[in-house]
Amino acid sequence: MRTITKAVISLATLLLLLVVILSAYNAPFFWVYITVCCGHLFFIWMVYYILTDKRTSTKTFDDWYEDHTIKDIE
Image 1: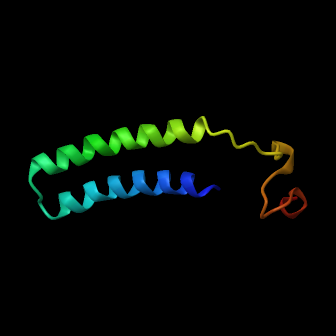
Image 2 (image 1 turned 90 degrees about the horizontal axis):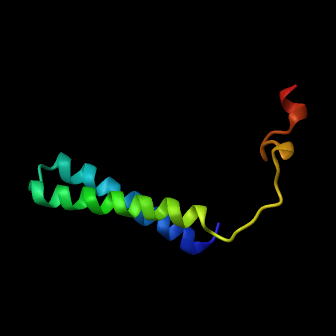
């Protein structure tokens, strides 16, 4: 995974975790609300960024999982 993709995922995740932390410490409603709105926008942006990324893969569903082969399961 590219560094920019990791940064986008981390930023969106940290922003949504900030909502939980602010709520737990009874922060003013205004800041919790702003953080929730920004968190949702960053989450939508993250999903859009990942789905429109130009990265391709040679893996198919026939490759199964990388940590277990089909022989291990049968």
